[in-house]
Every structure is written in C-alpha cells, then in structure tokens.
Image (cartoon, rainbow, N blue to C red):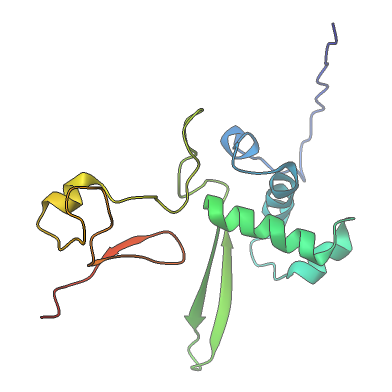
Length: 155
C-alpha cells in the first residue's frame, strides 16, 4: 500500500489562494488547472498572451492556447471586446477563480452541444419536421458555443 504525505508551509505573504472547486474541477486537465493557478497569481492589471505565457514554463504556445480553451469552455475565462473612451476596440480576457458554470455531477455527460431539444420546447407548438420524435424544432438554433436560441416567427 502506498501512502502520500502533504507538507504545508506557512506563507505570510506573496501567495495565491485558490478554491478547491477550481483545483478539483474534473473538466480541467492538470495543464489547464496549472495555467489557471498561474494566471490568478498575476497582478490584476496584468497583460499577457499565449506566446508570453509559454516563455515562463515548458509548455509551448499551442499547449497554452489549448489549456486556455479548456478554461474558456469551463467558464473560468471569459473573452470579449470592449470599446475604450477613444473609440478603439480592445480584446479583454477576464480570469475568475470560480466557474460561471457548474461541473456535471459524476456519471453525467459533460457540458456540450445537446443531442436533442427538451420535449417541453416541442410541445409549445414549435414547428417541427417530425413532431414528437425529439427532433430539433425548425425555429430553434444551436450556435457554435452550444447555446440554444429560439428564433421568432418570420412569417
């Protein structure tokens, strides 16, 4: 039988506190978890990119980008565009120590594009090509991010 000892040291300053939920999130690889920890250790006004991050550790730029995609998909990183007072647009990346989406319970499918639409949506009178079979109604659109949108009636 193998045993593991955890040794902790007291750190009066210069340390980062991370919630266990982020460290133990089953949706994240160890690489993505490490990247999250590193990003959260940076000062709030930091500016960086995948190439710069790759210079600090052994992973390459593509590995950092892959880990960043995991963090975006799991809801720890949010990317958007913001217009400054001078009218110029900037890309903004926000890193959060808590996910904006919850991990799926053990044994449940992980988040992603649904395979069908809830029967309640079909029963609301949406136009379907095969009513009642669980097919996707014609006025329901699944975007690239896996979000479900109901289009208004154009007729």
